[in-house]
Length: 332
Ligand SMILES: C[S@@+](CC[C@H](N)C(=O)[O-])C[C@H]1O[C@@H](n2cnc3c(N)ncnc32)[C@H](O)[C@@H]1O
Image (cartoon, rainbow, N blue to C red; front, side, top):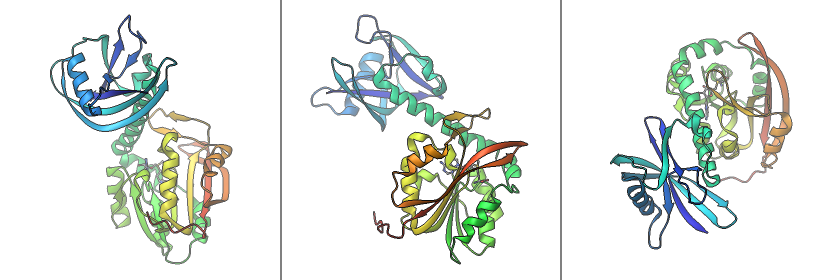
């Protein structure tokens, strides 16, 4: 297998793409700059050399970005991408016939070499997630005002509450205004509230009178810690490519016998709304398919419910789960 490196170079929100010149294999296709790793060369060393030889620039090779294996028929390629910071020199087009800088959401307007496509998809997803969090950051006050008194979790909150033993420890994952955290606190439980958006966490901290941790669900590190995990309309902002890894860390954070509620908008696909917020929607069969990979979780209930939001009735998917008491105590 041919080992090839690729550079994800982003400057002022624009990402560099290079077009393969006429006469070479895959002529006319776009790729991230890079090249073949030579014997006795590290991946990072190769990338720095290729960028210097082919584009006349000096760069700092940063974090590993991703791995893509593609079989072109005549050869199998393993492409290793790194984030790269441009340090000096002006980009010259020495071994390609065009260079282009474009924002992540326009990357798909180019015809990419197949091996590079997984990186294009990942960059687009990253951009969508960043735009979603930026929306909440920039509109925190209005968003909180709109949702702090919403009644739409009423019934399911009561049901969740009935499953908790007194003085339970509940994680409110993506707590938003803190509306539901406050409800559980007032019902006598202890709350850990988290939200990845600074402005939201700051406001919820004030509302709850206790610190709200700034964190994404994907970054949870606890093991067998919570009696209940409440994730109302928050995991819907996590792309499908990362949902299973997220469920794994949530499941690990839940105590054996613990309960977990989450909700999504009902739908089949991922999309971005007119506010540039990214949503990952599920139907009951699609969600059941994902949950089959977690034998330690049993479904207490999975159902659709209509909710009135901003004057519109929207179908939501509610999922109430229990972690088996037989689940092995995870120590790692
Ligand atoms: C639609 S609001 C719901 C807020 C609150 N749970 C409620 O029901 O009012 C989505 C919330 O999820 C948070 N969020 C976005 N991405 C997240 C992630 N990866 N992990 C946890 N929360 C996230 C947002 O900051 C926002 O506060």
